[in-house]
Amino acid sequence: MAKPKPNSHLSWQDYLKTVAPTQILSERGANLVVINLGSANVRVGLAMDEKPFNVPNCIARYITQSGKPTVVDQMLNTEVTTNQHVDRERAYNSAASLLKIPVLDESSSSGSASRKMGRIDGYNQASTAKKDAVFTWTDVYEDEKISLASSAETSADKGNASASEAVPDVTDSKDTSESKRKYRKMIFGEEALKISPKEPYCLYHPIRRGHFNVPPHYSAQRVCEDLTAILDWILLEKLHITHKERFSFHAVIVVPETFDTREIKEMLTIVLGELYFNSAVVHQEGLSAVFGNGLTTACIVNIGAQTSTVVCVEDGVSLPNTEKILPFGGEDICRCLLWIQRHYQKWPQINTDVLAKPIDMLMLNQLKESFCEIRAGELETVATVHSYEEGMPAVPHKTNLTSLNVPPMGLFYPNLLVPEIFPQPPRQWFQDYENMLEDTWNMDFGGGGNMGLPMWDSFAFSPSKPKKEEKIGLAEAITSSILSAGRIDLRRKLFSSIQLIGGAGLTKGLVAAVEERVLHAIPPTEAIDTVQVLPSRTEPQFVTWKGGAILGILDFGREAWIERHQWMVNGVNKGGLKKYKDSYHLQGQAMYFINP
Image (tube, rainbow, N blue to C red; front, side):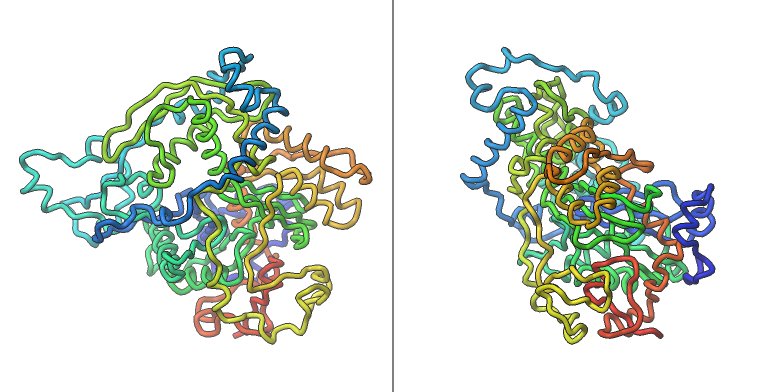
C-alpha cells in the first residue's frame, strides 16, 4: 500500500455496499499492518489476512540477580480485605438465588450430594481437545548449533519442544554439555507464560487493566522497551517483516478506550520511531468493532481479559458521553472459578497460584472456556485439573467442579470478581509529563467548553487523571450508556443493536442473560420494550482487529495518518492544523500535528 491518499481509499458507505470486501482487503491491505493492543493479548496481522496472530502481551527477560521475583506483578498488593470477602459472599448469594442454586450457607449445611444437579460432561464438544490439553514448561536454552544473533530470529520455533526437551537432562554429562548452553535472553508470548519459576527469568506485562503497567518497580521507559520488543518479535517471527522492509509498510494502531493521551503518544513513538513504519493512524476499539461487523450504529460491549468497556456509535461516530469503563474481565472470572471450587473443597490439594505461576492461569482459562456457562440450576462436571510444580511434568487430578454457572455471573455482580491480583497502578507518571493541552483550548474543563467543535459540547474531562472506572454490573453499564445517547429514536435503535465482543463474549448463555437483565434495568419511564444482542459476523475476539483493517483502507479519517518523519521531527504540536478525525478522545485531547 502506498502512502494513504484519497483515491486509494473507499468511503465507509461505499465499503458497506461492496459485495466483495475480502477482495478489497486483499488488494489494498498487503502493506498494511494492524496492531490491536490488549492487556492480556496483542493481535497483529496484515490487513489482507483473515485472522491476526493472537499473542500473549508479555515478555520474560533473563536475570542474574538472585532473589528477584520471577513475575514482576508479585510486588503488587494481593490481599483481599475483610469487606471485600463479605461483599463477595453476598454477591455469590445474590447470583446463586437468581440461578436457583444453594447459597453459601445452605450448601455448607446440606452438602452438595442433596442438590439437583445439571451435568455438562458433553458440553462444548468442539473444545474437547483443548480442555484436555496439557501445558509443558518452556525450554529456556539457546540452540547450541546456532549463534546468539540468529537464535533471536528463530525463537518462535522452540515452542514445539517436547516435554522431555523442556527439562534439561541432569546426567553425568552435565558438566560438559549443559555448561556450554546459554539461556535465551528474552522469551515472548505463551512461551514466556510457561517458564518454570525455578528458571532465572522475570516476567513482565507491559499493559495491565487497560493501561501501561507503570507502578514504581516498572518504569515507563521499560514498559515502552518491552512493548517494542514484543511487537518487533511478532513482526519478525510471525509476519516475517524485517526492519529494512518496514519503511514500505503502514500501521493501523487499534487502542482500548481506556488509553490516555500519553499512552497513545508513546504507542505512536514506538510504531513510527522504534519499529520504522512509514506512517501510522490510531483508532479506538469501539469504533473499529462497528466496522468489523459491517454496521454503522451499535452499542459495543467489549469484555476483555482485565477490563470491559461500553460505548455507543452512531453513523460511524463514537458518542463520548456514552463510554463506560468497568475494571473486570475474563481473567477475573477465572480467579472466581478457583475461589468457588476452593470454598466447596472441590479443588485438589495442589499449589495453584495464578500470580507466581502464570501457567496456572492458562489452565484456569481453559477450564472456564470449556465448562462455564450461564443457565439456571446447579451446574457441575468432572474435569481434569493439572498441578505444575517447578520444572516437573504436569500431574493430572480428576475432580468434580461445581457451581460453574456462577463465575460468569460476576459480569453482573462485580463484587464477585475481587481484583485481588492486579489493582490499578499509580498514575503519577501523567502528572509529571508535559501538559499537551496547555494553551491549546480556552475552555472550562468543568463542562460546557465546545473544544472547537459543536459535537463535543457535553464532553468534560481532566487530561491529568486516568479515565474513571465504574464498579457497576454489565447490565447497568449498558443501560446507562445507551440512555446517555440522547434522542429516543437513537436509544431504541441502540437497545436493539447491542454487540458483545471480546473473548468472554463467547460465554454460553451470556446473550440471553444480557438481554433479560438490560430489559429489567431500563427505567419504567422509558418507552422501550425491546432489547436485542446482534450475532457477531466476525469472531468476537477479532472484531476490533478486523475493523482496524477495514478502517485502514477507507477514506474515513485519512487526514489522521501521520508520516514517520513528521512525527519524529514535530511530535505533538499545539494548535496544529492536522488532527485525528476518527477518535473523539484523540480529538478531544488535542492530538494536533503541523502539516508538512
